[in-house]
Length: 66
Image (cartoon, rainbow, N blue to C red):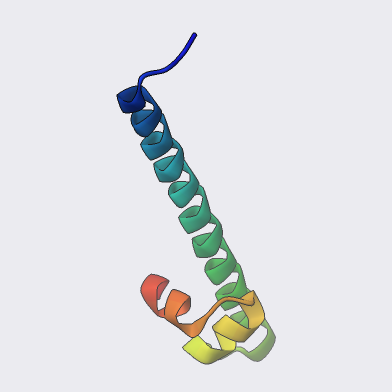
């Protein structure tokens, strides 16, 4: 069964959206875990830079989910 170009574009769009949701959720979880771990270890509220280093994400990503 051959798909039309519109059907292909629609499926690609859905796949891209699903992938973006998964990546966003994963990043948010990494940020939350890093914050909890740093807070538990130091007893202080962590900086964005500390969270970025611990989660191995960019500072820009951390700021997005801060």
